[in-house]
Length: 345
Ligand code: NAD
Ligand code: IPM
Ligand code: MN
Image (cartoon, rainbow, N blue to C red; front, side):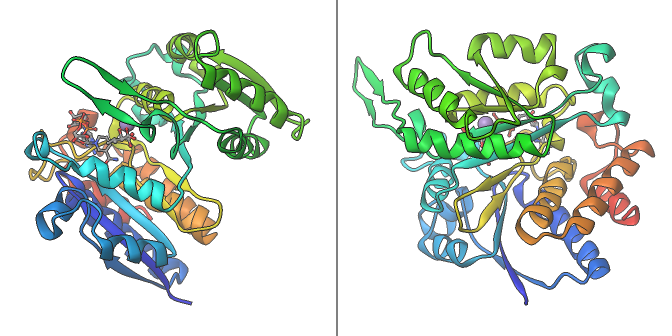
């Protein structure tokens, strides 16, 4: 049956990398016989410009009906003082589709090791996944900005914690079977609940080891000994910060994909980086984060393991051939990088 993929190219480098991702998808689909159609919709700043809203009604209804959603990036300085920001569309689609489980894998590419700011011996063996709670916490609590005071509310229910915790343990079952739950339970009430639920869920998964780590020391371990992590699970805000910290390990944000899942609706796949306004429109953005997001989509939404493997292997091979975009210290354009990956499929 034909699968419908809703694409949200968004802003800045978004449209450039979306084109790259879709070119790779087309080439792989032809090889593996994957039948799909694309439904491109305005979103983020592009949604504001076209429809007056970062998540226009037609975009949300198409996303709800989709088999999967690909998002490139949103945001930009143009909207910094606007009454509605593109980022509100991103939070709104996550909430509306109940995309509570954000999976951000971190691995080191052999051919990119030299780009890591960490020494080779610290980087060796780094392979972990950040499981970030994406629809709760301080992002979605009440925000109040007064003239001389402000308040952001951090709310979590045990059910919200339990479902993300179970995802983390399930993820660990297929990996090295270690879950590191990250909180700030020495200060925060939400973190005390987080830790209690983590201990309860751990009893359902006797084959997986659970350890707890305070977020400040976890941030430190990510630099001093990142290879010891397997699956990190944490609340929305800590996950945002720690996943950007993690992205420094491979040497660039430009190679980091992600997947966001709900209980049973369509999943959304997107790079973890933003719209990179500083390089937008120049054709030099690294398309690998988007291309690897396409691979995650093939594997996790469509069970097309061969297609996903094919893309990931082609990316490895392209790096081994020394073809690098500027963020990787090379001079390949977005198009050249994409064509090299397609040639290596
Ligand atoms: P950013 O991730 O857009 O850029 C940070 C740095 O990384 C920049 O120097 C940029 O050039 C570089 N970079 C990012 N992606 C790259 C790629 N594919 N190839 C080469 N270089 C790349 O973060 P920012 O500058 O803090 O934010 C810019 C805008 O993006 C803001 O409006 C922010 O809110 C938004 N944002 C959106 C998302 C999203 O769409 N999911 C995520 C993060 C930030
Ligand atoms: C991300 C981004 C978003 C977030 C912003 C743009 C709202 O930083 O996807 O990591 O904070 O979740
Ligand atoms: Mn972020």
